[in-house]
Image 1 (cartoon, rainbow, N blue to C red):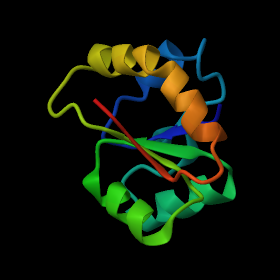
Image 2 (tube, rainbow, N blue to C red):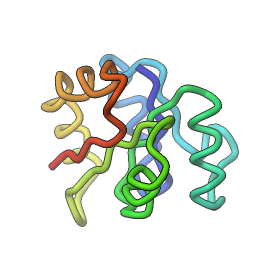
Image 3 (cartoon, rainbow, N blue to C red):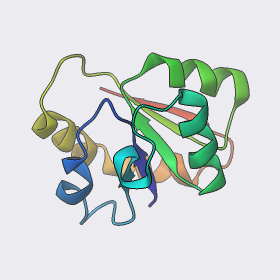
Length: 110
């Protein structure tokens, strides 16, 4: 499963979730720190990555443009990295089904 964590979540999630999401990257790992949402979107699309974000702008992009890339929107508000890790672990099956579904473009997790 290839995920691209946006800059509004910790890059530590890649290592913390490596057992479930082994091919995940963070925008920092690919030189996309502090770039526009459009650039992150284009990179994710070109590299078959689903964007994991807390940014509502990606939700809007998903509704406007569809996929690729798919968008996983974390609806947790102000929270710790551990809380995001727990959510991604708890909802693993939902993420797997979402990524496998060729029709769905957007998944909100809370």
